[in-house]
Amino acid sequence: MNIWIRQHALASSNALKQIISAPGNFIFNVLVVAVALSLPIAGLTLIENIRPVSDQLSIAPELSLFLKTDLSRSSASSFADTIKKLLKSSGTPAKVVFVPKEAALTVLQNSSGLGDVLATLGENPLPDAYVLSFEQHFELATQQASPVRIEALASQLQKLPEVDHVQIDSSWIKRLAALMHLAQFMLVALALILAIVVITVIFNATRLQVLSHRAEIRVIRLLGATNQYIRRPYYYAGAILGTVAGLIALAIVAAGLHPLNQAITEFASLYGSSFQLMPLNLLWSLYLILAAAILGLFGAFLSVRHQVRQLN
Amino acid sequence: MIEFKQVSKHFPPGVSALTDMSFTIERGELVFLAGPSGAGKSTILKMIAAIERPSTGQVLVNGQDIAGLNSAALPYFRRNIGLILQDHALLHDRTILDNVMLPLLIGGASRNEALHRAGTALEKMNLSDKLNAFPPALSGGEQQRAAIARAIVNRPQLILADEPTAYLDRDNAKKVMQALQAFQAAGVTCIISSHDEEFLVKASRVIYLNQGRQSQSWQSAA
Image (cartoon, rainbow over all chains, first blue to last red; front, side):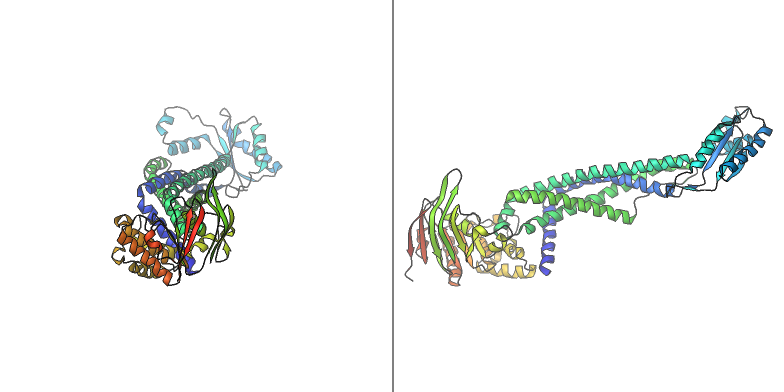
């Protein structure tokens, strides 16, 4: 056991000596790998920032029912009974709230910042509306499907002559979920492609290292070095390269968030939000550094096995 | 201890380095391999160290047929051999001390033990004042003595020296030969290839080679 530990300590120290003896090559390779790693890390940072927001979205599915604009107020008000009958017959309990067009205009004027523009219109362009809030919750995190019944009800309501337009307000969450899934899939694909790039870069860097140490390998072979003894320093060098590149990639992404956040702050403030992109947490960072080290080790492993076999 | 049984070695395309070579070298002998360049001296040393394998015949070292050594066993076999090459084969980016420590570290010795034993070996070779020098800063004789220190630091049972005095002046050549004779006196088997007639008389045996064949053999009466 002591010998095993000593051999690994010696290999890691030899790897560091190799790196120090050719710092230019090491820095260049680290930067190439770091840039390659920073792309998926940036994507992951974005998804991890959006995920908490989207995961917390848990709303009661709502139907917004916009009535025709020429419908009288009394007809609009009495239309609530028609809606309640339909709800009862379809077995879909819901809270029905009438939103008069005047109230809708007031909300729009106060929340959109378009008060002045709306004032110039002269008359209210908005229709009277109903909002139907269903008791059954649609949760993005659990991916429960929106009840088919709600969609059937929506299409029934759409056919009524008083109704101009029916909108299922939870559908945008579905689209967001689908978008998140697509982004995650693309991130995994990008990460796989860039992992191959990283392995290739480290494979080549290690190949050049082995070739430049051919004479040394020949000598230590004659002195009784095993293949493992010869290969080990290169494994360590690959893992060190991956680790340092991983750290730099995280730093690049963290540094890139600052100018991005300035733009996001400005944009989010328009919606009364203080949303900002945060760097990945410590656990994620450790996972990524470990993954980078493993990629480095794997690239070096493939290269050294091939090269040392050729030197035999 | 070392036995060549009808050994031939051919290199493509059709070059015969050794032809039907048979001899035995006992433990503790100091044997010179003599002959002109291309006679096959280095090939014999390389075969004993399992750097080359025979095309036909058998090379036995301590009863072990070198043809049967696989890549896993080969490093451990070589750790029992002190190899001194004509070009010294020192690593130029490491100090003399680091070079001499190398066989010990490869064998799994601790750094302290390696430091101590390498220091002692270099002291025996009168190189105590060159521990931290790099090989290019040393004379040819000093480099050769450093190579000998590296060969003996593992206390091998067998030393193989390929033209150890080839590029040395008389004084340095004598020092190197004296060192090798001292190891033989301590019971180490030494096989040395050399052109140098002056040193052949000090051998317990000389195997003369010519064009890959054993032309004659001379053995000391002692």
